[in-house]
Length: 140
Image: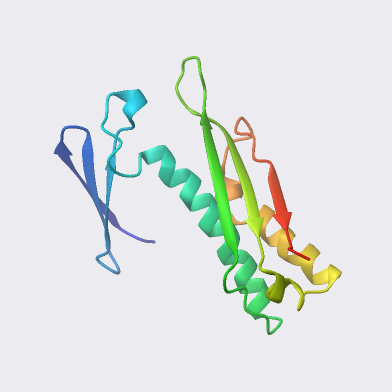
Protein backbone atom coordinates (compact mmCIF):
# COMPACT_ATOMS: atom_id res chain seq x y z
CA UNK A 1 0.00 0.00 0.00
CA UNK A 2 1.16 3.53 -0.80
CA UNK A 3 -0.25 6.70 0.71
CA UNK A 4 -0.67 9.71 -1.54
CA UNK A 5 -1.82 12.97 0.04
CA UNK A 6 -3.71 15.38 -2.18
CA UNK A 7 -4.56 18.97 -1.41
CA UNK A 8 -6.81 21.17 -3.53
CA UNK A 9 -5.05 24.55 -3.73
CA UNK A 10 -7.83 26.44 -5.50
CA UNK A 11 -8.21 27.64 -9.07
CA UNK A 12 -8.44 24.01 -10.26
CA UNK A 13 -4.91 23.14 -9.05
CA UNK A 14 -4.03 20.19 -6.82
CA UNK A 15 -0.79 19.25 -5.09
CA UNK A 16 -0.08 15.55 -4.53
CA UNK A 17 2.62 14.16 -2.27
CA UNK A 18 3.92 10.61 -2.56
CA UNK A 19 4.12 9.36 1.02
CA UNK A 20 7.18 7.11 0.85
CA UNK A 21 9.43 9.50 -1.12
CA UNK A 22 7.82 12.87 -0.37
CA UNK A 23 8.01 13.64 -4.10
CA UNK A 24 5.46 16.24 -5.12
CA UNK A 25 3.56 16.78 -8.34
CA UNK A 26 0.93 19.28 -9.26
CA UNK A 27 -2.10 19.01 -11.48
CA UNK A 28 -4.17 21.61 -13.28
CA UNK A 29 -7.39 21.29 -15.20
CA UNK A 30 -6.81 21.32 -18.96
CA UNK A 31 -7.63 24.41 -21.02
CA UNK A 32 -10.55 22.61 -22.67
CA UNK A 33 -12.07 21.92 -19.25
CA UNK A 34 -11.96 25.31 -17.48
CA UNK A 35 -8.28 25.19 -16.50
CA UNK A 36 -5.07 26.85 -17.56
CA UNK A 37 -3.22 23.67 -18.57
CA UNK A 38 -0.20 24.66 -16.48
CA UNK A 39 0.57 21.12 -15.30
CA UNK A 40 -0.43 17.54 -15.97
CA UNK A 41 -4.18 17.02 -15.80
CA UNK A 42 -5.51 14.00 -13.91
CA UNK A 43 -6.17 12.20 -17.19
CA UNK A 44 -2.66 13.11 -18.40
CA UNK A 45 -1.38 11.22 -15.36
CA UNK A 46 -3.31 8.13 -16.47
CA UNK A 47 -1.57 8.31 -19.86
CA UNK A 48 1.77 8.92 -18.14
CA UNK A 49 1.18 6.02 -15.78
CA UNK A 50 0.45 3.72 -18.72
CA UNK A 51 3.60 4.62 -20.64
CA UNK A 52 5.92 4.51 -17.66
CA UNK A 53 4.41 1.25 -16.40
CA UNK A 54 4.84 -0.43 -19.79
CA UNK A 55 8.49 0.61 -20.13
CA UNK A 56 9.23 -0.28 -16.50
CA UNK A 57 7.80 -3.80 -16.87
CA UNK A 58 9.72 -4.29 -20.10
CA UNK A 59 12.91 -3.17 -18.34
CA UNK A 60 12.34 -5.58 -15.44
CA UNK A 61 11.91 -8.53 -17.82
CA UNK A 62 14.91 -7.42 -19.89
CA UNK A 63 17.11 -7.00 -16.81
CA UNK A 64 16.25 -10.58 -15.78
CA UNK A 65 17.91 -11.57 -19.06
CA UNK A 66 20.96 -9.34 -18.60
CA UNK A 67 19.73 -6.62 -20.97
CA UNK A 68 19.36 -2.94 -20.07
CA UNK A 69 16.70 -1.01 -22.00
CA UNK A 70 18.30 2.37 -21.37
CA UNK A 71 17.11 4.94 -23.88
CA UNK A 72 13.85 3.14 -24.58
CA UNK A 73 11.02 5.63 -25.02
CA UNK A 74 7.26 5.52 -24.83
CA UNK A 75 5.07 8.14 -26.47
CA UNK A 76 1.41 8.21 -25.45
CA UNK A 77 -1.24 10.24 -27.26
CA UNK A 78 -4.35 10.76 -25.15
CA UNK A 79 -7.70 11.25 -26.86
CA UNK A 80 -10.72 12.37 -24.86
CA UNK A 81 -14.33 11.72 -25.82
CA UNK A 82 -16.00 14.48 -27.80
CA UNK A 83 -19.43 13.88 -26.30
CA UNK A 84 -20.46 13.54 -22.64
CA UNK A 85 -19.54 11.96 -20.38
CA UNK A 86 -16.00 13.34 -20.52
CA UNK A 87 -13.51 10.48 -20.27
CA UNK A 88 -10.43 9.03 -21.89
CA UNK A 89 -11.47 7.36 -25.14
CA UNK A 90 -8.12 6.25 -26.53
CA UNK A 91 -4.47 6.02 -25.48
CA UNK A 92 -2.21 5.43 -28.48
CA UNK A 93 1.18 4.12 -27.39
CA UNK A 94 4.40 3.86 -29.35
CA UNK A 95 7.39 2.21 -27.67
CA UNK A 96 10.76 2.80 -29.34
CA UNK A 97 13.80 0.73 -28.42
CA UNK A 98 17.14 2.18 -29.56
CA UNK A 99 18.95 0.29 -32.32
CA UNK A 100 21.96 -0.58 -30.13
CA UNK A 101 19.65 -2.08 -27.48
CA UNK A 102 17.37 -3.80 -30.00
CA UNK A 103 20.41 -5.53 -31.51
CA UNK A 104 20.84 -7.42 -28.21
CA UNK A 105 17.26 -8.73 -28.19
CA UNK A 106 16.30 -11.89 -30.07
CA UNK A 107 12.77 -12.56 -31.37
CA UNK A 108 11.56 -14.66 -28.38
CA UNK A 109 12.79 -12.00 -25.96
CA UNK A 110 11.09 -9.26 -27.97
CA UNK A 111 7.84 -11.19 -27.72
CA UNK A 112 8.31 -11.57 -23.97
CA UNK A 113 9.03 -7.84 -23.52
CA UNK A 114 6.05 -6.83 -25.63
CA UNK A 115 3.83 -9.17 -23.61
CA UNK A 116 5.16 -7.53 -20.42
CA UNK A 117 4.11 -4.12 -21.78
CA UNK A 118 0.64 -5.37 -22.75
CA UNK A 119 0.12 -6.86 -19.29
CA UNK A 120 1.60 -4.15 -17.06
CA UNK A 121 -0.58 -3.31 -14.02
CA UNK A 122 -1.80 0.01 -15.42
CA UNK A 123 -2.83 -1.52 -18.76
CA UNK A 124 -4.67 -4.30 -16.96
CA UNK A 125 -6.45 -1.71 -14.79
CA UNK A 126 -7.88 0.28 -17.71
CA UNK A 127 -11.47 -0.25 -18.74
CA UNK A 128 -12.17 -2.03 -22.02
CA UNK A 129 -13.97 1.18 -23.06
CA UNK A 130 -10.54 2.79 -23.54
CA UNK A 131 -8.85 1.80 -26.79
CA UNK A 132 -5.13 1.14 -26.30
CA UNK A 133 -3.37 0.46 -29.59
CA UNK A 134 0.32 -0.24 -28.98
CA UNK A 135 3.11 -0.20 -31.55
CA UNK A 136 6.68 -1.30 -30.91
CA UNK A 137 9.62 0.05 -32.92
CA UNK A 138 12.75 -2.04 -32.43
CA UNK A 139 14.75 0.28 -34.74
CA UNK A 140 16.51 -2.41 -36.71
